[in-house]
Each structure stands twice: as structure tokens, then as C-alpha cells.
Length: 194
Image 1 (cartoon, rainbow, N blue to C red):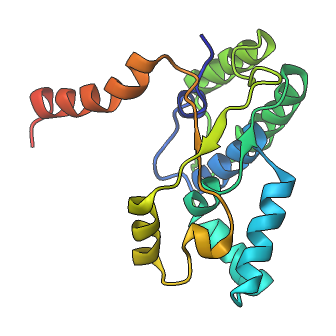
Image 2: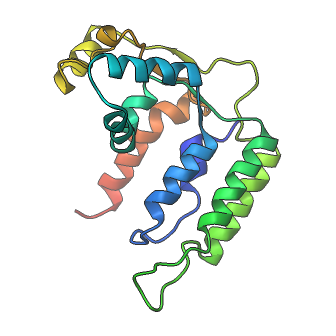
Image 3: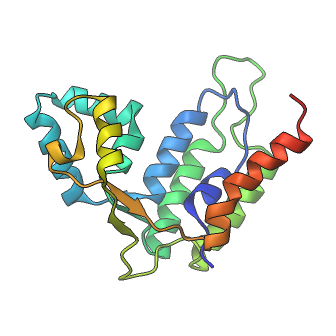
């Protein structure tokens, strides 16, 4: 069974308040998931067609990445490429300190570095990369989704853009994919006091 991207990225824990945390996660996401260039060109062209500037598109991607991730297929590259990309992110951010504090600690603790090393080992073993020549995406578009899109913005329906909404098959098994969120909510409801 392959490692799924969410758990892979979430495995290295760090301080919630470190100012480099968000930049780290954006860099890691971009290192792990490579966007399909043709899909991105179609989305950008569609957004420009309805009047958005390059700067507005850049801001939308920065602050509403989920909107793009539904319309642009992404893939996890082969282990050799992925290893170098992720290693570079760990090297760039791991020892970064909080410049706002005199006694600041690095973003990665000793435990985080150990988890990062395990992640790199899993990459080498091929547990993270997408299987070659296997399409992970299929079109996901129905009337309910079009209505939801219209409620977000009158001009942002997938049909109006001529850009498909995609759904990605999970790398984990069906049990984990469908019951994990439910189990998570049960654990919080039973064991975490409100």
C-alpha cells in the first residue's frame, strides 16, 4: 500500500507558532505534488477570460489553493526526483529559526528530523510516488457541484469556465479513506472533553 500525501506531509510535527510553518508546508506541497501544466494553462486562460489579472490569479492560488487543486491534476513524481525535491525543502526549512525571538528554536526538533529521515527513506523505497502510467483522476461534476460552485461565485461554475472538476483516487485502501474521518470524529467525541 502506498503512503498517502496528507499523512506523508503531516508526519513531521513542529511548533504551531513558528513563523516559517506555513511557508514550509507550501514548499513541501509544491515539492511533493507537481501540477499538470496543460490543466493549469486552461484554468489560467479561463480565469483571464472572465477578467482576472495575473496578480488576481496569483492571489487566488495563494489564498484559495483548494479551488485550483480541484481543477488541476497533480502527480507525485518518481522516487529519485521526489527525494531531491523533498530533501531540499527539509534542508531549507529544518534549521530555520524564528527571527522574532532572541532564544528561538529551529522549525524541526530532533524528533521532527527523525521523522523527516523516515519520510526520505519511504521515498527511496517508492512508497510515496504515484504508480507510473496509472491515471489517479476522474471527472467529478454533477448538478449539485455546479450549484455549490455558483454559490461561491456567480462566474466560477466549472461549466462556464469550460474546466473540469477532478476527483483523485486515494492511495490508501477504501476502508481507511471512507472511515478514517468518521473514526477521527468518534475519538474526539468520546475521549476529548469539550
